[in-house]
Image (cartoon, rainbow, N blue to C red; front, top):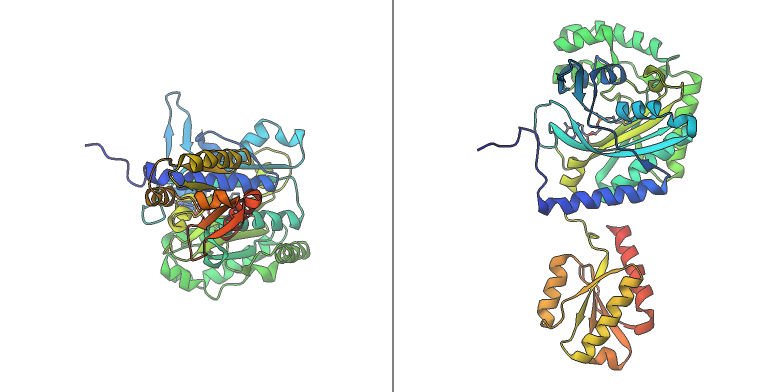
Length: 422
Ligand code: HAM
């Protein structure tokens, strides 16, 4: 028997509805922020990632699926989307057509990592990039967009957003030097990789997961103490913007992220319940990446969600079906009336179904199994009094009787309300 490759998973039919739900929610929220979709290919020239991500990162050093194709070119399956999106923006001159570009992409990424819970070799990201705005409020809005999506899928309580600033070309060199000096005094406790990286890329050492390295960097200098005036002001305005937007965050002066292109704002959202692979989204600003890839000298900011991790935490989404099931007493007069109600609901954009001719119990069972949050119940009594009964399927809200004319508005507001609480 031939099995799937280790770390690469099938998404089976009973899981696919959740994936679609996450994708639909993403499209709805991101379009509120003015983002459009870009679908780059899964494979790129290897050089794009070497230059874009940095050859001193774990992703490039150890995790890329790289091979030589039949024409002798080195190509790689994409380990992340940012470099690909920027390559497409530059290649198609999108910033010439519009100086502000906001794009999202959803799809599989590939990293040769040791598989474990929440870490796979093929995994999926929801990626967003916002190019052409240097100001701090673009950062605040982008972080808020990530927070909106995470909280609408998982609820705010489960989330922790951590924010840091990594400074810029002007102030980072002094910090690197201070860090190098500190690391030199601790080098005996560092792993082999970090002993090398402390010379080539000392910030990476702060991100090392080896326990002895984690311990060794505990007293390291903080980048916040080395930020130049511009970076400090930028960071302050980002944090104020987050508060204005109602985003709950914590500053984490040790957050450096695993990729090399970040400048200034960086962030991660972690969620309880995932074990060690608890980051569901990570991202930040990159002011030099477009020019590194031979594009215009324009900055950007973005992030990526790990979809598997989100879906693992989500449970059954309560608003999978935004609609109601019409339960009708098995009487010809009632069923005719129910047919009219169903048609009205659908005309108003509300999904509606019934199961005519079945017992009351069987209809309710069907509504519950299909995941309808609301049932409209119709019998002789309702018809005689020009009313309908409405039952919320979850919780203990008592069934209500509503005037026939008010029912559409009532159901619409109940569905919106459920969505907000989901
Ligand atoms: P990243 O932190 O490497 O950032 O990945 C983002 C998210 O992808 C992680 O927080 C995690 O949820 C998920 N992820 C990463 N590796 C795996 C894996 N092996 N298995 C499952 N999930 C995984 C980036 O990729 C940047 N390109 C984000 C970005 C966009 N920055 C600016 N724009």
